[in-house]
Image 1 (cartoon, rainbow, N blue to C red):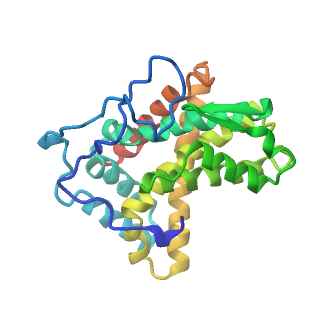
Image 2 (image 1 turned 90 degrees about the vertical axis):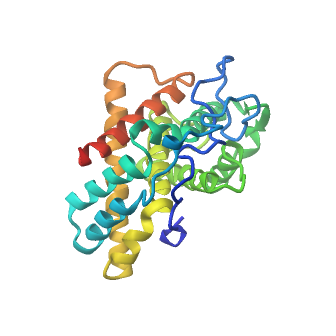
Length: 278
């Protein structure tokens, strides 16, 4: 997903949290849910009230500040752009984190898959995946198989963004840990992938919504790419700090906790961004 995938973003008058986004309450059986498996889930916002709808010109302030950042490189404008993106464009940190519920659920499914690879088999929402067939395969083949198992194509921008984020998070893990065996990852390596996945999914959603403002206002294409990288690196920095804080608090990051941990990281990350407009 390069800058060519940017769009004008969702408009006004639509639900801030689309009705197909699953309720954040985890299933009672404790299984890590697949983000596409909505059967039996309560919809977050099936009949939105007027105050749950996106306001007129929801991204105008964000685009203005991001355009200035694209022109000048001012980090103050970048931060204000991110703040306005969350505050008005997404309805605040709480609503933004609910909007990205599938990010938390995909992270849990990804963690389960990564943790189960060495056992040769795992199941996600009733779909059994024979990991043994990946023995001896290249890292690229393993990544492709995991993406298909964890986040199959469903025709939505969300799935496209998540698939892109999963693959890039695994690529970054291999850059950080070049000796890593993709089918026998350590806990540190698995958590690095989860951390990066969350950051990259936020970034990819951001690019889809308002990335065009950076592209249009940058003086040239190379500057646009550089500015977008600055934003991506900043999002990674904030997400990484939230995960470090979670580990420092002594919270368990096992498979049954990933959904809750990622939900909290999302809310806290969006909260940091939103502070720039308060």
